[in-house]
Structure formats: structure tokens, C-alpha cells
Amino acid sequence: MAKKITGPQILTANRLSDGMVVFLSADGTWRASIDAADVARTEDSASALEARAATFVQTNEIVDPYLIAVEETDTGAVPVAFRERRRIAGPSVQAAFNGQSNGSLAFAG
Image (tube, rainbow, N blue to C red; front, side, top):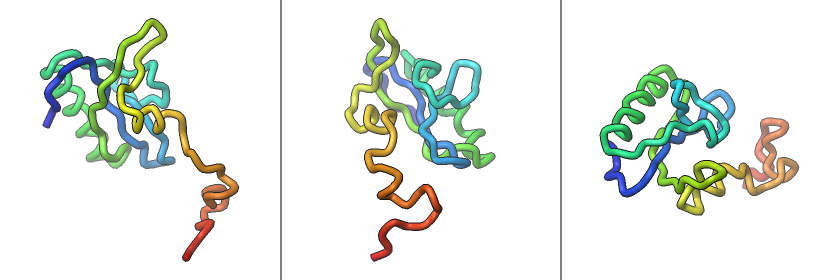
């Protein structure tokens, strides 16, 4: 299940209670901050992260956990892929236009 490690990777998912992007931390909890993410540097440690996430999937706490490549910088881990950097930044549509604030669809066409 683990990807072949070509560099450091972290495990991300979405929390089911609110859809928030979360990262598996070293203490085994899911955190909204990438700074708390547990970094895998080997195939074995990547497999261990995925195995820990499986329990949270079974208890419906998170959905779709997967590894993402990161670059370790002086200020912390930064996702390599643009898609993952965009996910961390949050929605790219203002709440007034996406209908999320009142639970209804903004456009039901």
C-alpha cells in the first residue's frame, strides 16, 4: 500500500466531522497543522503511518488517508505538489458563493 519513498512523506486525510484537511502527528492524533505531522523517511515508516490511519478509517474519523511528498525546510514541512499546497490553504471559493455557511447548495443547476 505504501508508495516507494523517494524523499520525506507525511500522511494526510480529511476529517469526517467537518471535512477539514488533517495530518497524522507523531502522537497518533490528527491535527489541522502540517507542522505537527509525523514524517516518514523510509518505506517501513510510511507503511506504519498507513497502518495507523486504517484504524481511524474504520471508526469513521477520517476519509481517504494518503501519503504526500514533502520538502523539509528550516520552517517545517512543505508539500512538493501544488495540489497539496492548495489543500492546506483551504477553500479557494468564498463561503458566500459556495453555500456551505447555511448547508444548502449555492447552485443547484
